[in-house]
Length: 170
Image (cartoon, rainbow, N blue to C red):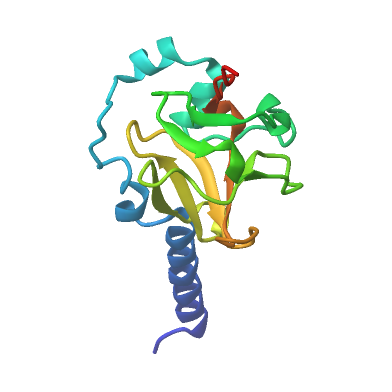
């Protein structure tokens, strides 16, 4: 006869294992971006040589900065926010807004320059955004932003560089 304790232990173990796999993400989800081909591909050593340690941690290891730590949080001039890894223009300054989150926030990227990937880390389902040209991790997009899109691209400022608009010659 089957012992009830063995049955309950087995069921609990299977449920725990399933929950762990869901929290971690399946290999297909976790490797989705890793298997994509990008226009700019470099070795890990080349990225480390090009980027600051903080940029490397964010763009290549999908890290995040402390809230309020990026100087770009307070950047309000006209211009373009570009990828710190490959300089692809990602966000126009007129789409930036104050979200109160501690990270630079935008309601819309420059069309075609930001890719998206499903992210199941930390037990939640989020949409990760990355540079479409080099694959650098930028942050996440949420559906609690302002009009006209209702989206909030919550971006790690150290993954960006700012290029001010040229002064008009008048």
